[in-house]
Amino acid sequence: MARAWMDRRNPRPMVVVSVEGLSKAYGRHRAVDDVSFEVQDREVLGLLGPNGSGKTTILRILTGYLQPSAGTVRIDGIDVVRDGRAARARIGYVPENAPLYGHMRVNEFLDFMGRLHGLPEAALRRGMAEARRRLALDAVAETPIGRLSRGYRQRVAIAQAVLHGPRLLILDEPTNGLDPRQVIELRGLLRDMARDCAVLVTSHILAEMERVADRVAILLDGRLLTVQRIGQRRQRIGLRLRAPAAQAAAVAQALGAVPGLLGLAAEPEAEPGLAAWRLEAEDAAAAGRIAARLHGLGLASLEPLDAPSDLETLFLRLTASKAIH
Ligand SMILES: Nc1ncnc2c1ncn2[C@@H]1O[C@H](COP(=O)(O)OP(=O)(O)OP(=O)(O)O)[C@@H](O)[C@H]1O
Image 1 (cartoon, helix red, strand yellow):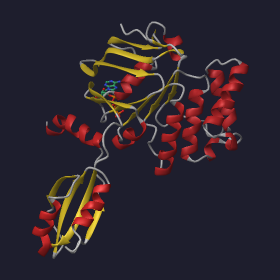
Image 2 (spheres, rainbow, N blue to C red):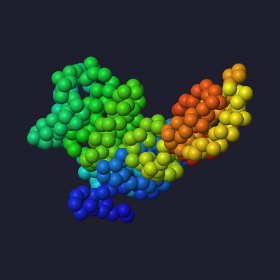
Image 3 (cartoon, rainbow, N blue to C red):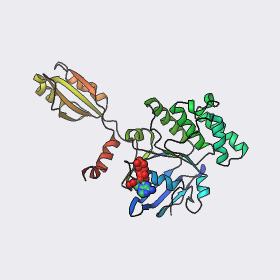
């Protein structure tokens, strides 16, 4: 059994979620198969996997909507099966396409949800004020939810989930339907939320996870393939270079001597009179060195590529067997 251990300066359990040997079968189909992981206090853990990999099933077990077939889940050391009510009181849940009451004003809705959570009056007032402040909802407190933008509605959905000061905030596919600006805002909000609780977020958008999560747990066919810490890699960059075809040999030779250039591949279909290469460089500064080295060889263009993130590469590698069979 995993014992939650304590930080001496801050006597809160460091492990908020402990999932051990979790399995769930629907009939003969194992939707979740012997999955174990932990979510630490003040971290964002991303649960990542293609459709049908078991993410929603795991969330439903965590939130007490489903019983596991085997294994245990503890929130702050409390078993979600044996003591579901106490475990649920520590969780804030933002479901995918969270149901909001469009006709209700933001304040009215938060008040309603707080009462559903059973919050006493003083705690409810405190929780509402704090949630509105953290999620920048004061300006729309008296606006009917139906009139808010999708980004604001998402914030209201998060606000209702944190009213009672949960130890764990769960968000299921929170970026669905948001525009790029709203996605960036959401990222900031999640990081902010993780200042005082554990955050578990599911997504199938890999690059998004890489930006917001401290660690990602990758699921496939109900099995946990790996848990990876994010953000310790170098920022490699991809570049596309075009130069006159007549200079191709000279360019290739010059590139061979550029420090920080890790790889190069000629592209098959170049435009008439132009040869093209894909390059992988150690960092952005290498682009400057490449341009300098090719001076005088008629460089036509040198542009960054939208290189797949490292997490995408890892994900594709880990899930390759699925694509093949
Ligand atoms: N109530 C159910 N009865 C039978 N099979 C189910 C049930 N719910 C889910 N499954 C199956 O269990 C597997 C995992 O489903 P789950 O919804 O947990 O995956 P997911 O990763 O959340 O996918 P999605 O992103 O599509 O929601 C899938 O094969 C699914 O078909």
